[in-house]
Amino acid sequence: MPEDKDTATEEPTPKRLNEAHSRGQFPQAPEFQIVISLFVAYLVLVSLIQDATKQIIELTKGVLGQIGQFEINFESIVSGIHFGISFLAFLLAPLIVATMVGGVLVGGLQSGFRLTPKVFENGFEKLNPVTGMKRIFSFQSLINMFVDFLKLLAVGIIVYISFREIINDPLFYTPVPPIRLGEFIFQTTILLVFRLFLVMLIIAFIHYFYNRKQTLESLRMTKQEVKDEMKQMEGDPMIKGALRSLARRLVLMQSMKKVNTADVVVTNPTHYAVALKYERGVDIAPVVVSKGKNLIAKKIKNIAVENGVPIVENRVVAQSLYRSCEIGSIIPPELYKAVAEILSFVYKTHKYYFHQLKYRRLQERIGTISK
Image (cartoon, rainbow, N blue to C red; front, top):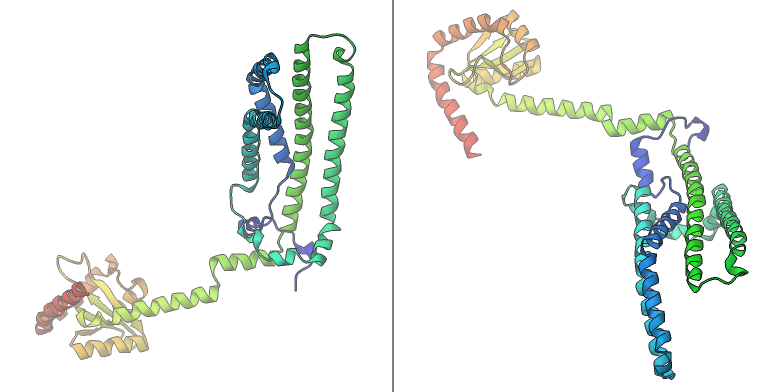
């Protein structure tokens, strides 16, 4: 059962934001496409208008200068239309391409140039008329209608102001040179585009920041949701504990296999057992190859007995080794002397075993290499 929205007081986590982004739920304002298109159109008009004007003038001179030589028939009319369309397309191509690239670029900037694959999921649900009616009469649709009304109002005001300025131009009530007509059209177009750009830019920013605020508020999380997400990211403590326990068991099972090549097993005598290995020229100090308590200690001692590994009872050393050393680690310096005495003792009393031990270790290395 979903929790009350009033309890959602926490800021959305990066994971929640990423999931929302993949569904297409991120701050955006479609007006930015219009703004960029107007801005690009303004730049293109300013930079290319002179060349375009020269081409139009040259074309006009050519057509009017040779108009008497043209034969008016169906083929010439079709050919003229084709030429006019091609020439117009050639002039407008930079403007069209630039506005398209600008629109794609600003869309990518708003989405972070990231894909939103989940937008296409549940496509049939979006065609549901009931769902569609809910969207139409939602609060967000009213906001979008208000923004559209602002855009329409802004365009109307700009057109009205521009129209009042245009009709007051001397072009409409005094004789002017023909070139003035071209200048008038160019200046009026540039001024109109620039004004539309400024107004739409303001509306786009207002709409974007409103959408950003609404999106972040809709993605707010409850404290329990944040805790649950942290558990998912870090892993369930019970599962992590079970994995650690399994890992310890695996290490222990591996260590049991090395008891038969140990130099000595130091015991408590019943509760603790620690198997030690020391090879001159290989180990810098004696290494704990296996250790255990209670039942595991008993199993280590049984393996030692089966393989003839020397067993030495030393309560203090056994407990110290068990508590201070991990399997595979060397013994601490404070135990060097005590362990050295134990090893010296077993070297003297179990000479035959240590002759066998060299052979066992050699077999172990060969087996490891062959694997």
